[in-house]
Length: 475
Ligand SMILES: C[C@H](O)[C@@H](O)[C@@H](O)[C@H](O)C(=O)O
Ligand SMILES: [Mg+2]
Image (cartoon, rainbow, N blue to C red; front, side):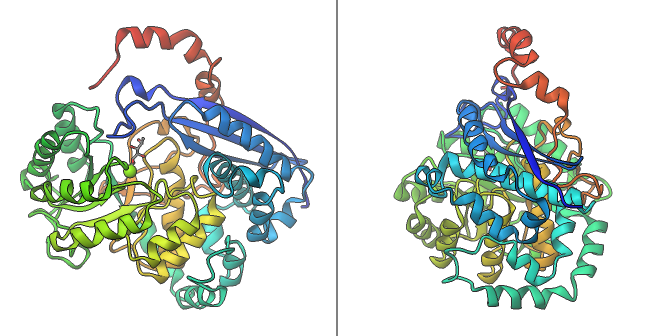
C-alpha cells in the first residue's frame, strides 16, 4: 500500500550512567549514555524509529539537526523511498544549505544516521522482517542500490560489489541457518570500564567468563602502571581454566580463528582501547610497554581522523603481534576507505549511527570485505548493541561470508529500555533477532522515554538529585 510520510517526533533521552562510572575511558571520563531519538509517522499505521548515540550534553543539538533532516522526508511516498535507498540517502544528505554545516561529519551527519536508520526500520517493518533479514534477502542489485556509493568508486566499483555479492549469494541460506543455530561471536567491554575498581573489574570478568565469553576489552591510557596491574588481573582470570564453565572446554590458542589474536592458554583474548588519548610516537611507546598482557589489538590509539598516524602505529606494533583497530569515531565512509587503502587497520569498527545509517554502513561493509579486513562493530553505548547485531548478520550472511575472525562488542547496559532488546546465548554469542515486527530493534518503551527525557522527564525532575546525593556508585 502506498503511504506518505506525514511527520516526525524527536526525543532527547539521557540515562544517568555517570553515577556508576559505566562507559568511562581515558578520554570520556564522565558520560551519561544518551539517545537522540526520532520516530517517523505515515498516513497509515506504519512507523519507523531511529536514534543516534551521544554521551550527554549536546544531545539536544543533535535533536535539532534531526528535525531539519527529517523534514526532508515529509510528504514523500514510502514505496518510492524504499525502492532505491541509496538515492534516498543522497537526497537526505544533500540539502543545499544544511550541507555547509558538514559535509558528512559532525552533528549533522550523526543526525542523518538517526533519520536514515528510522527509515530503514520503517522499511523492514513494512515487509514484516527484522532489518538484517530484509537486507540479506535482497538481490545483489537491490543491495548495491541501497548503498551510499558516492566517493568510494576508487576503492570499489558497483560492478566489483555486485560480483562479490553474487559470489556469496548461492550460500547465503546455509550461513543463515548456521548463525541462527550457533549465534554471532561477541566480546565484553563492560567488565573493564576505566572508572571501575579492580575488585569490580575482577568480579565482572569472572562473571563474563562464566557466561561463556572468550574475548574481553579493557580501557587503557590514563595511567600505565594501573593499566598493567589491571591487565594482569584480567589475564590471570581469563587464562585460568578453573574459571571456565564446566561445559566449555578451553579453546586451542593456536586454532585457526585465534591465530594472530594473542590468545592465552585457555584460548581467551584480551583487547585494549585508548579512546584517542595519545600522539603517534607516544602510542607506540606506551603500547610496547603493555606487551606483557598480550593484547590482540590497540583500539583508537590516536586521533580518529589521522589515517597515516594509524598506519605508522600499525607498522611499529606489528613485530609485537599487536594489531590496530578503529572506527567508532570514523565519521564517514571516506575515512574508512583511506584507513583500508593505507593498510592502517587490522580490524574495522563501524559505528551504526556515526556513519549516517544503514546505507553508509553497507558501503563500508563492501569495502572491508574487498580489502579482507574483519568488521567488528562498535557497540559501547545505549542502543548500539540492539543495532549492530543486524549489521554483523548482514556482513556474515550476504557480504564477507565469514565470522571466523569477527567479534561483535557487547556492553551490558540499558537493554531493558528497548521493546526488542538484544540477547546473548550461553556460549557468549549474540542471538539472532527474529521477531517480524522488530524492524531495526531500536524502538524504546514509551515509559522509558517519558522517564528519562531531558530535562523534564520524571527521573531528572524527581529522582536525580537524590540519587546523586546518595553517591550511587560502583567505582
Ligand atoms: C564513551 C564510551 O563508553 C566509549 O568508551 C565506548 O564507546 C568505547 O570506546 C567502546 O569501544 O565501546
Ligand atoms: Mg572504543
